[in-house]
Image 1 (tube, rainbow, N blue to C red):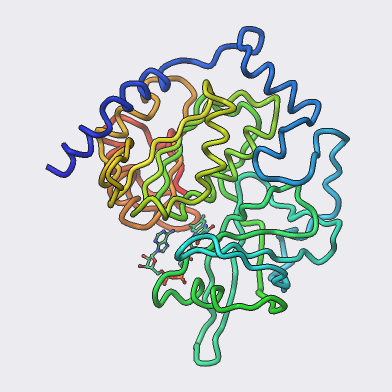
Image 2 (image 1 turned 90 degrees about the vertical axis):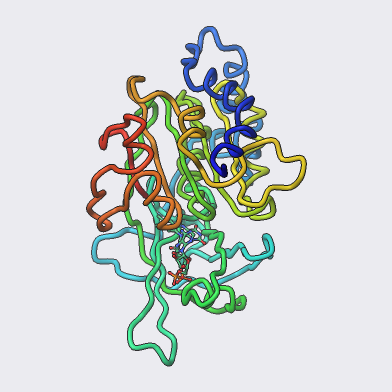
Length: 325
Ligand SMILES: Cc1cc2nc3c(=O)[nH]c(=O)nc-3n(C[C@H](O)[C@H](O)[C@H](O)COP(=O)(O)OP(=O)(O)OC[C@H]3O[C@@H](n4cnc5c(N)ncnc54)[C@H](O)[C@@H]3O)c2cc1C
């Protein structure tokens, strides 16, 4: 009943998605929309503003400067919190100063950082991974979008932090290494804050005028006011209608909601994702443990992706076609 009603709501959009997912991206010479977009990016006229970045790095030779996070035996570095923004009812955006204002984070795409905190009563420190929402080319700061979980030790600690305090952060924690046009079509399945690694990859693809990868995002949330980075994704859909689409699902949708209702179902994924028989596709997934369990099977450990299971296996995807963040 639940799944059927989810699909009913999704059906008309699902059909247009199926068409979108099975269309290959036209080559640069025939695709006017992205000739315009590519030219604009190359000349730096809007490429960075549309993803909310202040710096126009394509207008001049981009100098990555010194990297704040170098990995290896660098260990944790202590970063000062310089700004906190209320983002929505349970999420805040934290801006941390990098050690030098000319430094970039040094994080490759895709990668994360880990944060560490030990409260006065704690026996051992809490360590959690996060993916910055600031751009890899941004200098002097790194931004994290953090949702608070009741009794979640790290997110509660961070939501209680004040400007001027410091947090121990280590990186990069390498994930799936991206290079331009590595895949023809990537499908991103995210639940809640699991969207931040997807946003990192999407930024890298659309900030690079040479990268022609097509992107489909399936994004599940509780309510409409839980959807993170919605404006950024809407802008991308508008600027790249042939290469970027988002399909939202909500557990508690508003009355006039036009996307999916309920959890991300098998039928939604069947309609929205590129077919597993298509060459050179990759499916990425990130979200709470129940999302992995239902859709891809759990990850065994940070180093071990575990077997592919769940809906993606039933739909015929192979282990090699799927990456669990
Ligand atoms: C690669 C990666 C990147 C991440 N990036 C971000 C990010 O940018 N922003 C952010 O807020 N979180 C992100 N997370 C989740 C983050 O690492 C923590 O799990 C989260 O902040 C909860 O930590 P906690 O110590 O407060 O609570 P915990 O005690 O760890 O968890 C509290 C509750 O939240 C649930 N939970 C844990 N992780 C998630 C999740 N990802 N989605 C939904 N429910 C969850 C747990 O099952 C538990 O019920 C990311 C996770 C991964 C693996």
